[in-house]
Structures are given as C-alpha cells and as structure tokens.
Picture 1 (cartoon, rainbow, N blue to C red):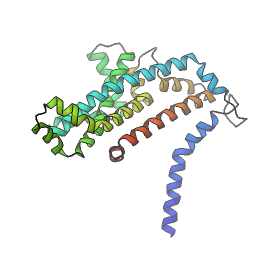
Picture 2 (cartoon, rainbow, N blue to C red; picture 1 turned 90 degrees about the vertical axis):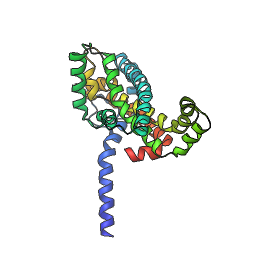
Picture 3 (cartoon, rainbow, N blue to C red; picture 1 turned 180 degrees about the vertical axis):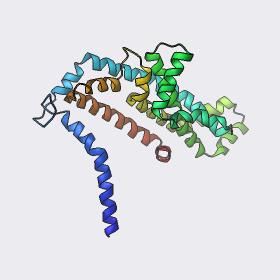
Length: 258
C-alpha cells in the first residue's frame, strides 16, 4: 500500500510539472493586464490584439506555408524511404534516413547552415527553412510507414503479383490503401514538427524571415505579454489536434515510436 501511494504521488508530481505550466499559459492568455504578473480579470482582448498584429499574422502565414509544403514533400519521400527500408536490406539506408531524427537539433541546424552557405552558396530565407524542415521530417514519416508495413502480411502483395498485377498496380491497389493510415499519420506528425520547430529554423531562416516560433521568441525577449500567451495557446491547440488525429490514424505505430 505504501509503495503504491509513493508511485501515485511521484506520477502526479511528474504530470503536474509537465502540465501546470501549460495551464498557466492558457489561463493568463485571458488576463486583463499588460504586465501579466498577476491575475486582474477575464478578457478576450488579447486574442483581438493578436489577430490585429500584422507581424504575427505574417509569421503565422510563413509557418503554415512551410509546414504544408515541407510535410507534403517529406511524406512522399518518407513513404518511399520507409518502403525501401522494409523491402531491401541495405545497411546504409536506415543510417541515412534516420540520422536527422537521432541527431540533436542544434547540431543539425548548424550542419544545414554550413551546408547551405558554404556548399550550395544559398541565400538564407524561406527556401532554406523549407529544405531544412523537409530534411528532418523525412525520417519521422519513414519510421511510421516502415512500422505500418512491418505489421502486414506479405502474402497479400505476393497474391497481387501472382494474379498478374504489375509493381505499380500492386502499390496503387494493395499497398497504398493498406499503409494509408500510416502515411496520413506521418503527414500530420511532419506538419506538427514543422510548425513548432524553433532551433533548426533559427539557424536556417536568415535575416528578415520570421516564423511563428521565431516571432514568439523575439516578443518574449522584451516582455511576456498576454498576447504571447494567446498565440502560445492557439499553437498548443493546433499541435494537440494534429497529434490526436495522428494517433487515431495509426495508434499502434505512434505508441511504438514515441
């Protein structure tokens, strides 16, 4: 009994440490005070201020554009990589695909910065951020698709080929419908990772390019106003919706790789 009570206490303390700060951010987004040091009263004014902030709206538009394009491209390439890792035993392939997933973000960001400037001679901007987000998203999609394929019966694909289906017809009519939940889960995961990313974006964005995480960072260097809480609340809500949708599409895959 005592051990059970200690485990419950430790668990509650851990969850409180994780979620109480998030709850405080959400609650104080409705605080009727610019200083945000103490609760004054309830208001929706900071959400109205947020939606009238052109700089914030521009940063949000950049984030959504980058997330949509990068997650779409990463889903196509990641699906191909996941299928390749499943069907062919090439030792170098998992290393090349999964290294960006395992690599610390700050190291990946610096590496991409050096690569863009010194190798490609590319001016940092939206294109460099887009390429960086595609790079680190491919591995996540590949992991989910590969896990989805690993749980399938290979006899289904062999039966399609025995019945005269070409490799393309087998993929289009058999493989793709079966792995589609995993592909969509990978798409949502890549979108979530892209729209939330700060470290890699910070190194590859360049001057004059702002995304939502970068804009929030620039605002909190001055003061943490309830407007910051408001945009953080909306970003948290969007991320939560994406993660829940991904977990509904491929629950067994996400449980085994998160």
